[in-house]
Amino acid sequence: MKLPVENGCFSAAGTGRLVRLKGKMNGAKYREILDEDLPQSAQDLRLGPSFTFQQDNDSKHTAMTTQEWLWDKSLNVLEWPSQTLDLNPIKHLWRDLKIAVKQHSQSSLT
Image (tube, rainbow, N blue to C red; front, top):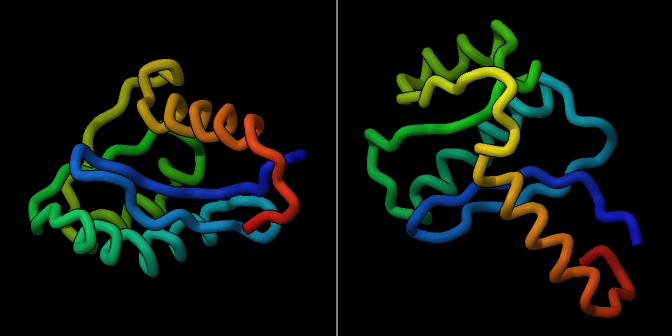
């Protein structure tokens, strides 16, 4: 079973919203997710106004419009070195989720 494309977040306090995407992820969809889901996830996780946001150097993350959105929202963004996919903790979380899903018989996406 091929998993749908999803986007999500987590912190030491737990996991934030998991967003199922229809179609391919691009910069516009990424900013839409940030705009619609990041504030609620931060609130649900009780992160407070000065949390540090982390993302890797994917092109939709480094796009000028995304950078402007982050700046407009006054978010603290962790600088991320290039070519360090193995250091990104959410990649490990996605791997663990895929393994857990494969261990169960799934009859639907939900």
